[in-house]
Length: 286
Image (tube, rainbow, N blue to C red; front, side, top):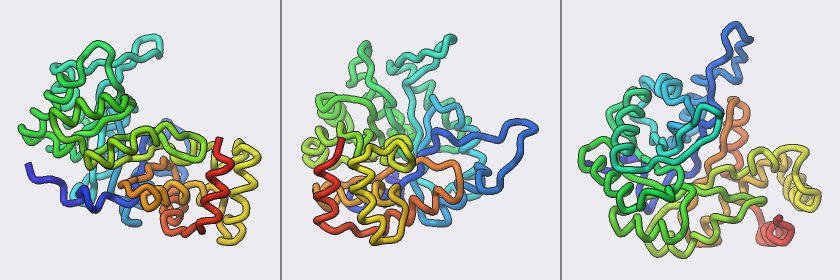
């Protein structure tokens, strides 16, 4: 299967759009043009954001499929499998080979596409060896149902074991000024040529509102004033700067449910922070 022309190891997407909260309006509810899900996704595509990220767990694959209808060739479509909701609202992980195949087929149907560009294991399994899971994912690549495979919520050892079965294109982990777990993976990602997709770069909203820790808020205020931008854009720009600082491919994946937020996130990718500003932000990270 030919790799997606929208992604290469040397030229990954600059920024993605996380679609976890993308939903149709409630029946009978007010339709806000700024929050229309189709308009939100199309605004991202119009701004050059090609990577769209959803998951079986999010329950919105059919909606995502409708939003990209007619523009499929502009999209690097990512979805995930393995996390299953229970009747009581709890969740469990299923990553055996049969589940991999079944989940992929149902995701393809819901999304209304012939191939998934990047297919992630959403969460590691304590029961199924990762070699079995990735072996089944590799079979999907060979069958032309998937172009590339990714991992999320795994360990460094998992990454090595998985990549020994089939090359892992991307690892998705949280990275922001308030979450640093992704940094433990940087050496192995660089060694194996794996892109880091940094989800929740705004700390699940913590860095774009009143919940920002006081020391960080003060550190963000300086560059925000200099650039005349909101502090949330500076926080997102910090994640963008990590690619240069670590010589590691990093794709920030902010979520957005409005056109205005999409545009603000895209603008953050062009912000240039000084070395002194980066050092100050590093010093007050929580």
